[in-house]
Length: 260
Image 1 (cartoon, helix red, strand yellow):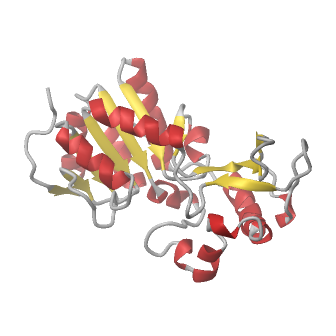
Image 2 (cartoon, helix red, strand yellow):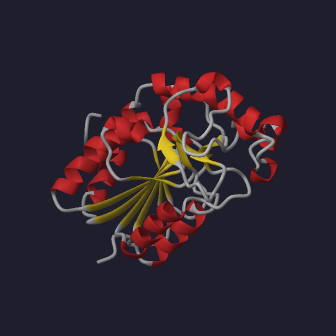
């Protein structure tokens, strides 16, 4: 039975209304959750996509294009090495913790919860979420530029901003985030597309849903009759049925019914 009863859109901010919406969400047995920069903003690390993000800086954007490799490696590591250290020292936000606690509760009661994120940090995992699918890669992974070598590893070191080399073949390593001109992670995108085909609810947190693949996911969720909710203080893109116009830390404990 589809949870979406109509195609009207409502804006929600009052705690009582957020809790009432949470009661609807609890009826869902298959939930797709998509998170973006807004859920990590309260943890401190700067955001890089979206309005006001670092990618609006022309110089920063220029060396984040795949066409600039390998010449951009020095600039990439000079930038992302220190960011690794900053994110490593950050703590998961109240929103991360509330979502992780809710995910654990729902999975325990038999609900299928697919968590997909646009973020490259590991704050979901450190908050206790499991099976997190990263669309744009992982800040704490490095891989060899030589595709025939195939070396990749989990790597939290900042390397002092210097370019590390592959321990297997000696070729220089790159951070494993998705750069401009590259496709999003295939496995993460497949997980999102598989989930949205059968979901009862699609919950977007800290992302407006205006950019692909989020924009396509909300349209598909609409087509299958799913309840669609956007939690973000900015304008919601797409055609979400409900827009909780609050930051994740303020909204999620009420919406999900967990303290965080």
